Image (tube, rainbow, N blue to C red; front, side, top):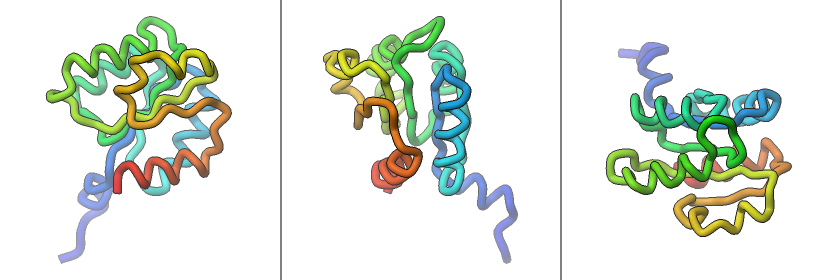
Length: 128
């Protein structure tokens, strides 16, 4: 019996990209779509709602987003870490924000610009 397209797609690891810059979100999605099932959120509030509905295997999280910041998302996830276990890559354009103590909760913190190739390879390593 051959797997259906739905079975194949659902067996892929899931990645949620929380990024308010649409161009960066598209680039990250393209880089990760080859190996993963990718969803996007345009802000932290949307990301938290999507995580609550169905936790991804990996969250790629921007820090400076409207409504709910990436730092607030990290605080919320830390409080509920047993409910939402996932790997987290923080991507920020602010090197100072990368030193915030909450970043210790992330598996990896990257300072933008990030090459799409680098992001894809790091995601593969984290989800291996």
